[in-house]
Image (cartoon, rainbow, N blue to C red; front, side, top):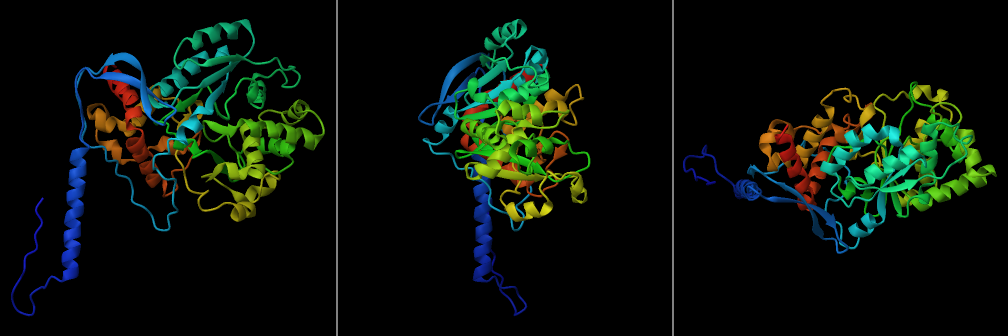
Length: 460
């Protein structure tokens, strides 16, 4: 690139280049030159026969290759630079979470004390293998510490043996046999009841609750679940006539109005000790055993959400130990407030929600069976493809991804069930920061999974 300034001599009408304008011109040239050099330096090539390896975090905060997949790349993948261009910053934008690497003593401690918790039974086998497992295969590069909690039945014990020997090699726990009268002999309520007693099958400090139809859609960095050591909570608020009546169970359990609905993201991360404290609080409030209270607030179909009860408890009593984000429903109708007397009114949110809380955050996963596009027979492949391409495929296998969509919004980061956050003007910047974090801080860990997808999709 050649930049030059030409002096023009002539009459008083001739244009004179001032010193200030010359400096601005030189600055522009230097910026363009820097961008060109960066673009050239990020171009990469993976040679034929490169061995793919899985990686994990060690206690020193470094990545260590631990397991070969016995797969090789059969063709060269030539990158064209991994710049993802998103909408520019808006004015008055609040600061968002830093993408600087976490210090070596912080990141491993959080992950070593964290695990995923899945309560299921053998009847959900198809969902487990067709939704959760393939999405973890390509997008969960962190240490896999999954506990699957099953019923203590012959069918579930046989199923437990099967999944324990297959990726992601979960730890199997068989739940204690609660009195069926407590949960009305309803498997849906039993699943939620078990999560209130997570410590009986789980010994980590932080638990991340997921479902069998949790579907990861992007490389899941720690920052999608934690701000340093604070778990992220993404609560949904805003009243609507069609809103489920979960708020009834929340107020009955806690004796306080519901602030957020928290069946709004996965994994739902909580400190296990806070779940135990919540049970004690509820029991003391109602002067009876927690199981009796559970039976009381769980009467009726869909009358409560365990996640809403948990997250509203920590909002009221442990708020400083979590980072809250509040998503306003995109179909909110505040004028129906009287229909939901157990919900907080609009004035409460105006007084308590900060600008930082209202800033959108990307999600690592969707609730697949409740996603608007889940009936598409190719939905699983489509969701994996766009996540893999954004996470590195545009660079490492552009022929599989194509160039067009790398400049668009990755909608699944901001959509959960039938509501989305894409109406917020800051989503583009949030997406850009997430994928910059993936490329800058976790590229070596993410790369084997994305290359594996590049190879697998090439065989379809």
